[in-house]
Length: 160
Image 1: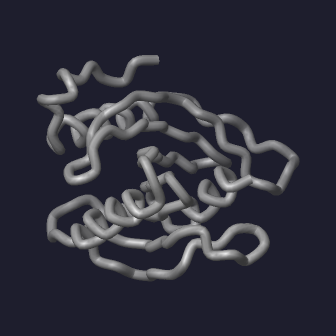
Image 2: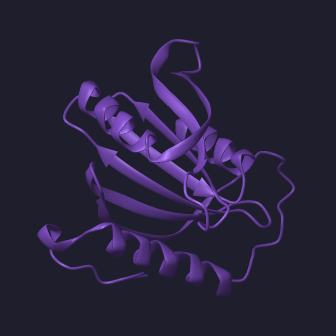
Image 3: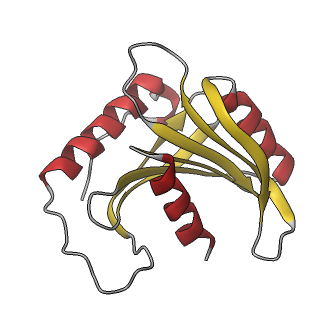
Protein backbone atom coordinates (compact mmCIF):
# COMPACT_ATOMS: atom_id res chain seq x y z
CA UNK A 1 0.00 0.00 0.00
CA UNK A 2 1.47 3.35 -1.01
CA UNK A 3 0.44 6.07 1.41
CA UNK A 4 1.88 9.05 -0.40
CA UNK A 5 4.18 9.85 -3.27
CA UNK A 6 7.02 12.03 -1.99
CA UNK A 7 9.34 14.29 -3.98
CA UNK A 8 13.04 13.55 -4.45
CA UNK A 9 15.13 13.39 -1.24
CA UNK A 10 16.55 16.85 -1.84
CA UNK A 11 13.07 18.40 -1.93
CA UNK A 12 11.49 16.70 1.07
CA UNK A 13 10.70 18.96 4.00
CA UNK A 14 8.68 18.81 7.19
CA UNK A 15 5.48 19.73 5.30
CA UNK A 16 5.92 16.63 3.13
CA UNK A 17 6.36 14.32 6.13
CA UNK A 18 3.37 15.88 7.91
CA UNK A 19 1.26 15.48 4.77
CA UNK A 20 2.33 11.83 4.50
CA UNK A 21 1.58 11.17 8.18
CA UNK A 22 -1.82 12.82 7.79
CA UNK A 23 -2.58 10.59 4.82
CA UNK A 24 -1.45 7.53 6.80
CA UNK A 25 -3.70 8.49 9.71
CA UNK A 26 -6.58 9.14 7.32
CA UNK A 27 -6.08 5.69 5.81
CA UNK A 28 -6.15 4.19 9.30
CA UNK A 29 -9.60 5.63 9.91
CA UNK A 30 -11.14 3.68 7.04
CA UNK A 31 -9.45 0.32 7.77
CA UNK A 32 -11.77 -1.93 9.80
CA UNK A 33 -10.41 -2.89 13.22
CA UNK A 34 -9.65 -6.55 13.88
CA UNK A 35 -11.52 -8.37 16.62
CA UNK A 36 -9.48 -8.84 19.81
CA UNK A 37 -7.59 -12.11 20.12
CA UNK A 38 -7.52 -14.28 23.25
CA UNK A 39 -3.87 -13.42 23.96
CA UNK A 40 -3.41 -10.62 26.50
CA UNK A 41 -0.01 -9.60 25.08
CA UNK A 42 -0.32 -6.76 22.60
CA UNK A 43 0.06 -7.84 18.98
CA UNK A 44 0.83 -5.29 16.32
CA UNK A 45 0.37 -5.51 12.57
CA UNK A 46 1.98 -3.29 9.94
CA UNK A 47 -0.74 -1.62 7.90
CA UNK A 48 1.38 0.78 5.86
CA UNK A 49 4.98 1.70 5.09
CA UNK A 50 6.74 4.56 3.43
CA UNK A 51 9.72 6.84 3.70
CA UNK A 52 10.38 10.49 4.28
CA UNK A 53 12.62 12.96 6.03
CA UNK A 54 12.56 14.48 9.50
CA UNK A 55 13.90 18.00 9.82
CA UNK A 56 17.41 17.88 11.39
CA UNK A 57 17.55 14.06 11.19
CA UNK A 58 17.32 13.11 7.54
CA UNK A 59 15.79 10.07 5.81
CA UNK A 60 13.47 7.86 7.87
CA UNK A 61 11.33 4.80 7.37
CA UNK A 62 7.66 5.44 8.25
CA UNK A 63 5.52 2.55 9.48
CA UNK A 64 1.82 2.67 10.39
CA UNK A 65 0.86 0.07 13.00
CA UNK A 66 -2.44 -1.36 14.19
CA UNK A 67 -2.57 -2.96 17.62
CA UNK A 68 -5.24 -4.24 19.98
CA UNK A 69 -8.68 -2.65 19.58
CA UNK A 70 -8.39 1.04 18.90
CA UNK A 71 -4.58 1.30 18.80
CA UNK A 72 -3.23 3.21 15.80
CA UNK A 73 0.43 4.23 15.88
CA UNK A 74 3.08 5.71 13.61
CA UNK A 75 6.77 4.84 13.87
CA UNK A 76 9.60 6.88 12.35
CA UNK A 77 12.93 5.03 12.24
CA UNK A 78 16.36 6.30 11.21
CA UNK A 79 19.44 4.07 11.10
CA UNK A 80 22.50 6.15 11.90
CA UNK A 81 26.18 5.47 11.21
CA UNK A 82 26.97 5.23 14.94
CA UNK A 83 25.38 5.59 18.38
CA UNK A 84 26.70 9.16 18.78
CA UNK A 85 24.88 10.25 15.62
CA UNK A 86 21.67 8.65 16.89
CA UNK A 87 22.06 10.53 20.19
CA UNK A 88 22.65 13.82 18.31
CA UNK A 89 19.44 13.22 16.33
CA UNK A 90 17.64 12.59 19.64
CA UNK A 91 18.97 15.88 21.08
CA UNK A 92 17.98 17.84 17.95
CA UNK A 93 14.43 16.50 18.03
CA UNK A 94 13.70 16.65 21.77
CA UNK A 95 13.96 20.46 21.86
CA UNK A 96 10.96 20.65 19.50
CA UNK A 97 8.65 19.09 22.12
CA UNK A 98 7.57 19.55 25.72
CA UNK A 99 9.26 16.75 27.70
CA UNK A 100 7.03 14.74 30.06
CA UNK A 101 9.62 12.06 30.98
CA UNK A 102 13.29 11.59 30.08
CA UNK A 103 15.31 8.54 31.15
CA UNK A 104 17.95 6.05 30.00
CA UNK A 105 16.76 3.37 27.55
CA UNK A 106 17.54 -0.07 28.98
CA UNK A 107 17.55 -3.54 27.48
CA UNK A 108 15.91 -6.61 29.05
CA UNK A 109 18.94 -7.13 31.30
CA UNK A 110 18.85 -3.56 32.64
CA UNK A 111 21.88 -2.32 30.67
CA UNK A 112 21.69 1.23 29.31
CA UNK A 113 21.55 1.09 25.51
CA UNK A 114 20.40 4.61 24.73
CA UNK A 115 18.05 7.33 25.87
CA UNK A 116 14.27 7.72 25.75
CA UNK A 117 11.77 10.51 26.30
CA UNK A 118 8.00 10.81 26.38
CA UNK A 119 6.95 14.13 24.89
CA UNK A 120 3.90 16.13 23.78
CA UNK A 121 3.57 18.94 21.21
CA UNK A 122 5.19 22.19 22.30
CA UNK A 123 2.97 24.52 20.29
CA UNK A 124 -0.61 25.48 21.04
CA UNK A 125 -3.10 24.47 18.40
CA UNK A 126 -1.30 21.23 17.49
CA UNK A 127 -3.37 18.04 17.81
CA UNK A 128 -3.18 16.24 21.16
CA UNK A 129 -0.82 13.35 20.55
CA UNK A 130 1.94 11.62 22.44
CA UNK A 131 5.38 10.81 21.09
CA UNK A 132 8.11 8.58 22.47
CA UNK A 133 11.62 9.35 21.22
CA UNK A 134 14.41 6.87 21.82
CA UNK A 135 17.78 5.64 20.69
CA UNK A 136 18.93 2.04 20.62
CA UNK A 137 22.52 1.77 19.43
CA UNK A 138 22.56 2.94 15.80
CA UNK A 139 18.79 3.42 15.75
CA UNK A 140 16.76 6.58 16.35
CA UNK A 141 13.00 6.05 16.66
CA UNK A 142 9.85 8.10 17.24
CA UNK A 143 6.51 6.48 18.04
CA UNK A 144 3.38 8.64 17.94
CA UNK A 145 -0.17 7.77 18.97
CA UNK A 146 -3.14 8.91 21.05
CA UNK A 147 -1.55 7.80 24.35
CA UNK A 148 1.79 7.16 26.03
CA UNK A 149 0.58 3.69 27.06
CA UNK A 150 0.09 2.71 23.41
CA UNK A 151 3.59 4.01 22.64
CA UNK A 152 5.07 1.93 25.49
CA UNK A 153 3.30 -1.21 24.20
CA UNK A 154 4.72 -0.78 20.68
CA UNK A 155 8.17 0.05 22.10
CA UNK A 156 8.11 -3.24 24.07
CA UNK A 157 6.90 -5.11 20.99
CA UNK A 158 9.71 -3.69 18.84
CA UNK A 159 12.32 -4.50 21.50
CA UNK A 160 11.49 -8.23 21.47
